[in-house]
Image (cartoon, rainbow, N blue to C red; front, side, top):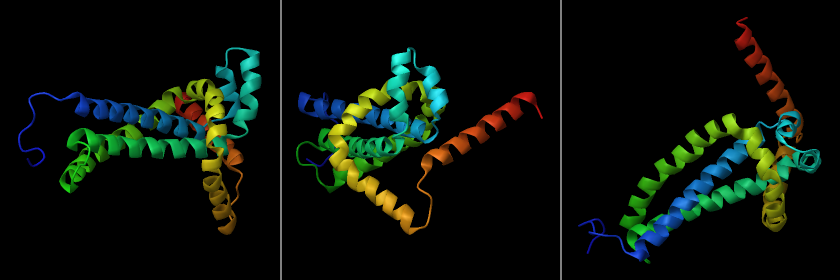
Length: 194
């Protein structure tokens, strides 16, 4: 029977399991995308202001100084979650051995979903809840990063090497602080109306 010839009356557990897992991967992709965007625009004073206790602030300070390697881990996890979303979606739609047509349909459905979650929702969530998200997620992310350091190290080393080869500064923290300061200045100007 060709795929999508006649839709089944009900979905079996074999089909709903991978689709439920694919949905979870899509949500994870969105959370990781929001976390990555939050890291891009984070400044230590704003994130530390979200910490409720002094002990929590003390734990966040060294993590905020290591946002570069932590963001590399987030990028690796985000790519993995996106890939799993596509693979599990294909399995849920086409069964254990999906053919080329099912893969094409899966990509046709997955790409808009990934765009919506990664390029539309993630930046909006990061702008609205980014500092609180970082304050809550950095400590568990650090523990996960320790597991991923072997996987993320080549990517981080490659990024630093490329920056050096292109003659660009590798000091992303200074750039982040500058951009955040300019944003705050623009926001203050917009509020005052000048």
